[in-house]
Length: 281
Figure (tube, rainbow, N blue to C red):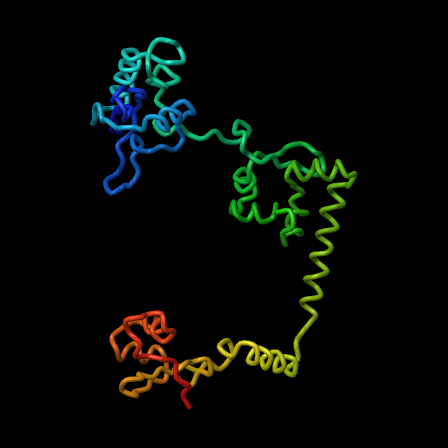
């Protein structure tokens, strides 16, 4: 892995205020850490907001060990503000191999959702990923099951899992979490059973189809295209008297797109008043 050492200088006077290392990205990548403003410290952002920033690639094509050593040397040379030894906003002495620091996972990550076993009340998993790996399912499916008002109540009852925030909320309201999941499961089973029993008759289907046709003709079972579509608008050239059945046909005949033809028919193009909507037979 090839790395580079970069400097951030104040755009106002050119003073170095940050030293960092980054790995060289693959060819064609649009991401380059030295030019990124994301995931910077509060002190860095304050300087950036006040003075701006110029990026200087100090050294390139180094190994990770060489880049770390150079970073340490530069930080020692310029000094750190938090230690009162210099001008840098760096918060470490460098060389910690923080090239793409991995995000903490599981119990070590403060953003992980705590998931409890409703039967014991103890935290069993930290985050949806652990649940997905344990059950052998997709992480997104776990999120759908754990959703507060989702439609996967049967699966959630079988798993016996619940977000700790929801679990604490139910206990605060003196509701048994197990009984709560059981009630949701029974409701889901009842709705599913009723849906399976209900079958529309041919007469009912015909009534529904007619209602759709009356409400939205363009969504009917029989789709009419071109001038046969009852929603289509004809176009007339007021200078020549030539007519077209649809806006699309008029646009193609005049070498423009249908959006531009529509604007002309609505009178929005002041330079071209040749076209208007026309009721065709």
